[in-house]
Amino acid sequence: MFSYVFMKILENRPRSYDRAMDKASRGRVKQMKEDVAAEVPNGSRVLEIGCGTGELAAMCIARGSTVEGFDTSPTMVEVARRRIEEKGLSDKFTVEEMGVDGMDSLLDRTYDAVVSTLVFSELSDDERRYALKNAHRVLKPGSICVIADEVQPRTSGKKVLYFMIRGPVLAVSYLVSKAITRPIEDLTGEMKAAGFSVIKEVRSHDDAFALVVGALEGVSS
Amino acid sequence: MNPLAFIWGFFFRLFPCPTRLGLLRIGNPSKESPVLVTCNFYITVRRLFRALKGLNLWLLVADSKGVNVWCAAGGEEFNTRSVVSAAKTSGIADLVDHRRLILPPLGAPGICAKNVREETGWSIHWGPVRMKDIPRYLEQGCRRDENMKRATYNWKERLDTGLGSLFPFYFIGALCFLMFAGDLLLPYLVVGAATFLLFMLACPYLPGKHGLTKVIILDLVLGAVLVITEIWHIPSSFSLRAYLIIAMISLLIYGTELGGLASTLRSDLDPFMAKLGIGVVGNVCWSGTIRTDLLLGRRLLVFRRVRCIGCWSCVEVCPQGVWEMAEDKRAVFAHPESCTACRGCLVQCQSEAICLEPNTKHTVAA
Image 1 (cartoon, rainbow over the protein chains, first blue to last red):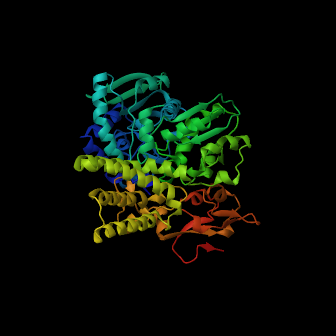
Image 2 (cartoon, rainbow over the protein chains, first blue to last red):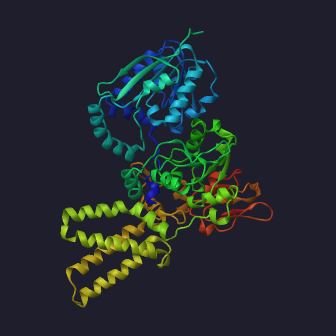
Image 3 (tube, each protein chain N blue to C red):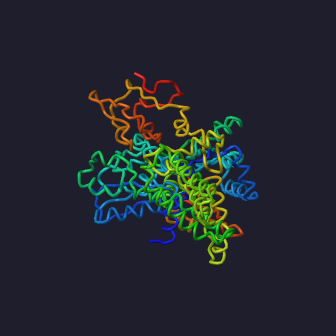
């Protein structure tokens, strides 16, 4: 059925996801995850929003942290769980199939860091607000929230160039992978609105990716 | 209105046309006002605004990846997660005193009412199939009469879905003629549009059960006319031959997936592609889905009546009236011949009385 089959989901290919993403982004995505992991203090208890196949979680674990992640994609969660099993990480990494709407079930003041990469650009305005509000709630005083994602360039020239390139790429990406993302207009502003003090913002050369570190005021217990 | 979004959403419905997600106010809603849930397809939201004019209610636009309710639910894009997420993250709980969500019943193949209820604490009510019935449904205290539960496919709906789904093919055809046979562009535009109109208006009355059968019969008739003019050298111009060939090809395109355009018909293309062994192209999945398996008869919808708890879910969501409630307060698989394999009943059944099994000879087990 024409109208319908166009919308059917091709099952994700999570096994090759990290490799394909790495190749498509010419190593930028992997580097972005490494940058995020580098912001997390060693030995932290980390919550990862949209953990995917667990690549970032593995980087945090390599730095002595423990990670609790969640993702809405059952296939991604399955691959992450396989990673846990294969690498013997069951005491350091747990994964739930859940969306940001399930964050209300997490306990207050539990984590030393909340991290997320390339997830917020897939969320609606309400979902992002809800996720940041809950991230603020579940973090211990003095801890950090690190978000790295696709953002809108700040200058008009770069914006025009970005959307001209992005249009066709988005069309191809939709036809192949069904993925639709919306670059975030003001990630820093949204983090501030959720109550974080933004202590660091790093932009990519084309101004289309940003890594933002928000801190919770107070002394860590 | 955004004219570009309107043109894209209306004529290129095979592709997504998203609108902003979240909560919208219709009129001046209060804490008691009903909460309607819909998809984030631009055209649907716009039409809802028109249909709900003069009412006071909350409209919760949930993620369907910019696709209409029926298609997105069938493709599992408009699903339990989208509704749960919209209900929890929009802040609607702080704005109303009740906990009732009214969902579009054509979303039943994607949204499991039981799971939404369990995850959000909101009760689920299926609204009318057609949005024009919403004001009357609300006036009646959120009660649906039988007409509000059944999908139709009248001439207006046929033209609407036909234009939305087939226009891209007409458009591509026009581009091809423009590039390679400019002198035939005008005949193509006229004949292509005329065959579309005639086929869409007349298709219920044409012989044949499926769209493809109907157009093959029509093509045979047109082909016979073509052969007769050629064999008996009936004086004809090149244009007549060209018109006939254009009409035959256009009909073939319009009719091949007639079933895919309506919620009242079974898809023809899914099983056909699956039979050809074409499983997946890009993000389009042609085989291996429950729907295709049901259409091909590889799996059967089995009703285990002893398990039925009389929750009415199947009766409530089937747009074809396949299910009926018997005197013993258990469902009856009354009209399996009308089933379009949408999976709505399967997703909503609360006691697993409706389930899938590999093909056996009996569809109803005691």
